[in-house]
Image 1 (cartoon, rainbow, N blue to C red):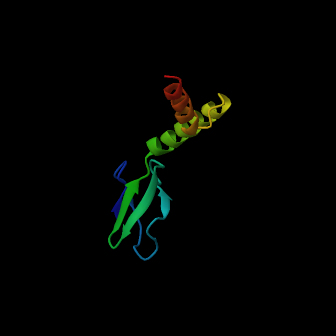
Image 2: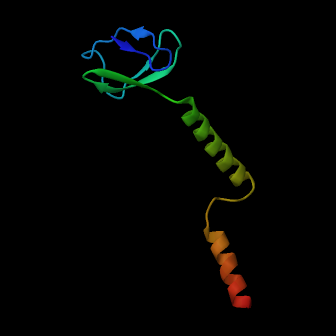
Image 3: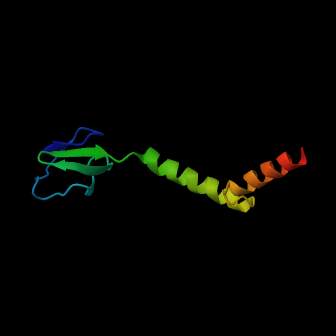
Length: 87
């Protein structure tokens, strides 16, 4: 028996039935749980914030591409060098 770290409900898991890295869902709160240890079984909640951060990064990259910025610092370096040469 192991408890959900999110809602503390008991989850019936046998350490021989799960593998490290396996993703499970809590039957009570439906939180995504990762098996981080099998002897004894230990679960961690997979943070929804991580997913949100990834989505925000992807949106920022898409906006940068739409603005014509490829995210490459090379453009800025060239501009700085041209300014130095003019002085």
